[in-house]
Amino acid sequence: MGTQESNGQTGTTGRRALLGAAVLGAGGAVLGMSGPARAVGASHSGGGLKSLPVPTVIGHRGASGYRPEHTFGSYELALDLGADIVEAGDLVPTKDGHLVCRHEPEIGGTTNVADHPEFADRRTTKVLDGVSTTGWFTEDFTLAELKTLRAIERIPANRPHNTLYNGRWEIPTFEEVLRWQDEQTRKRGRQVWIYPETKHPTYFRRLGLGLEERVAKLLHKYGKDKRNSPVILQSFEPTSIQRLNKLVDNPLVVLLSSATSRPWDFVETGDPRTVADLVTPKGLREIAGYAQGIGPTLDLIIPKDANGNLTTPTTLVTDAHKRGLILHPYTMRNENPFLPANFRKGTDADAYGDPFGAFKTYFATGIDGVFTDNPDTGLLAREDFVNS
Image 1 (cartoon, one colour):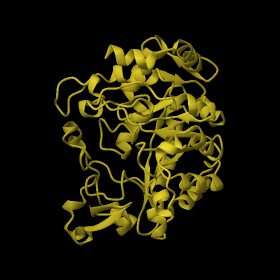
Image 2: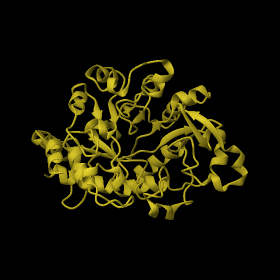
Image 3: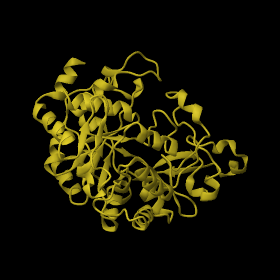
């Protein structure tokens, strides 16, 4: 572990000083002696991305380490724990064209739909981005029907305690999230940021349920479609971000999966490039032409060896920064199975490892922020890092 940490931190003294200045200085944040970093002046939406602390702590689907994901219970807890941004939410459409927040359009694993006999005949098999998937899909339900369902924990084997909250919250719509954002901003006296994602946009466009226009319409309705609006938009499909770039002025981020994977819009159009091509200097230069950042998997920042241990960081952070792109990689979680092998403790699937050590190693690469299911852990890790 010491070797891996050393690899991740080589030559980072200056970067640490810069990060500390960004968090403590004019970028607008202050560190309390015993509390997490908080943004100063974050209630002023005119600050845009530069008003956020660095590294930014993003509540992944809310505080999904503690509550069923993409519920207002999860979103509000993320704010309570100090998250700078809440990923609310992954956007998928209903049959009647509303946008709702679910990790995937298949909702058998995140709602109690299987307990509703009136929807038994909706169970079907579809090909979703080339993968045969069986279950219940949001596009086969009206909003009114989805509102009769309740959210459940997606990974109960890793988070048995979260099942305590099964059935407590309904599926939120994106419009409800936008109103909730305003309410929470007033209630908390600081600007609440959200980070929605367009899910499977090519798939839904083929169904006549284009996502980007619906997202833009709602952002315009609520006056949140500007360059400094506290809404960052993201997608795994570069063409979805390019489409959004023509519809709104919000900050935009291209999500990047494993190096050998191909974005599904590339597959559909015959574009042979992989993510490995997109993270080259040429690929990053192209992304910088229509987006402000990238959201790479953490493995693109620091690869793992065959045993799952972290190795030497890649040049992606430096290469992206040279082209003016921010990096918000995903996803840090506290539980053993989700941590690099050299930061695990024991073998229990629901036991915590050493996420603080992992956060420290990733922060040392110079990333601008990170998605985490455990915002409180991320905030404490950031405080340790900027004060070290």
